[in-house]
Image: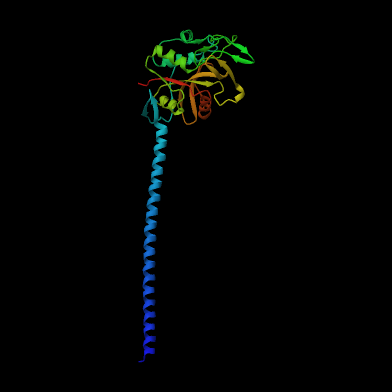
Length: 283
C-alpha cells in the first residue's frame, strides 16, 4: 500500500470517527436537554403551586382579618362576626320636646341599654353648648362649632340651630359610665359591626336620607376654631343590628325600632358625616 492509499484510508477513518463522535454528542445533548426541560418544568410547577398557595393563604388571612378585627381602647381583638344581629335596645322619641335632640335621645337609648337610668331631657340639659350667636360678616356665616358643643336651640326649630357631634356626646356619656365609653370615630365601619356582633349597640351621626348626599346639601360656616362643613339633614340614631343587606337602627325622629336601610347606603352616609360613632364596652 503506497503513501497515497494510506493517506486516503487515514482520512476516511478520521471522518468516520468524527461522524460517530458527533452522533454520540448529539444523542447526549438531546437526552440532557430533555432532562433539563423536565427539571425546569418541575421547578416551574413547584414555584407556581407555592405562589398560588401563598396568595390564597394571604387572601384568606386578609379577609378573615377584615371580618374579625375590632378595636377596644386601642387593643385589637379577634372576633368572628355573626351573620345577623338585631338587638332589643330601648327606642325613645325625641319629639315633641326635643325637635333637634336626636343626638342626646340616641345617647339616652345607648345608656339605658347599658343599665343607666337617664332621660333624654336630662341629657339635653347637661350636654355642652356652644353659645356663639349666628352672625354674618362679608357674606360669610359665623356660628357655633358642633365639635365643641350643641349649636343653637335643642328644643325648637323655630329658632336657629343645628346639633352636636361626637366629642361633647362622648364627654357626656363618660359622666354616666366612666371609663366604659369607646369612641370609634374615624375608624372603619367593620368596627361598628364588630360591636354589634358582641351585642352592643352603637351611637352614630348620619343623615335623614340614610345615603350619600349631593354636595349642595352642605354649607360652610366659620367658627372660633375655623370653618366647618355642615348639613341641616344631619341626624343621629342608635345602630342595633345588621344582616347581609341591611343596617338596623332605632330612629328617635320617627320613633321606629329596628328601622332598616341598605347597608352600603348607610355606610356611605356615615362616612360622609365624618365616621362618627360611640359605644360602650362589651362585657
